[in-house]
Image (cartoon, rainbow, N blue to C red; front, side, top):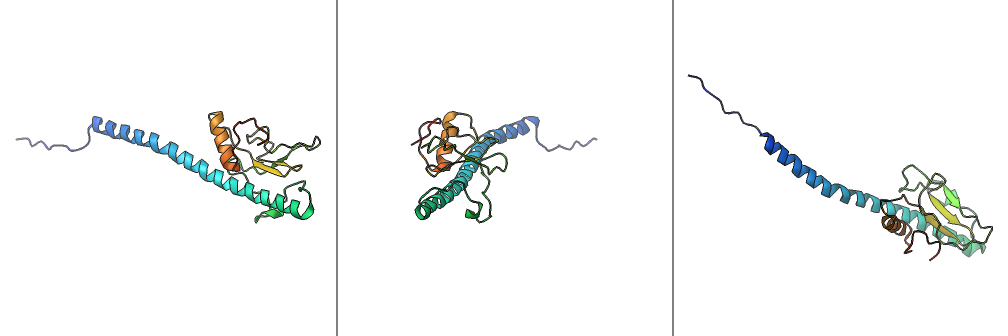
Length: 160
């Protein structure tokens, strides 16, 4: 007489159901995590922007003019911090051409580029962080406004 042992384990259908459920959960959680990461990076950038703006205005109050550059000694590290929103550790500052006496408070291009991650206009003391391009112009604008504590309504705006 042959004794048959009942084998226990999961069937292919049960495994597929678990995989599908995990996939659904991942599709819900991963975008939320990505948004939280962007928000924390934007908060870090906003802190850098506030630090520079306060030093620029402090210089204006004591010297009567805006500084021509952003000084490295303004920062604890002794150098301009990198922009946490940039894909590479970028800290270069684009100095706006003031030969025409520009009154721009926002850069014409809001996107991080190989030429810089921050923007400064010494004719009026405006300092802004550039941001990476997002899927839509509205998302890029929202990230730019969050990182710079601004409320411009157009990605092409150069003033408030």
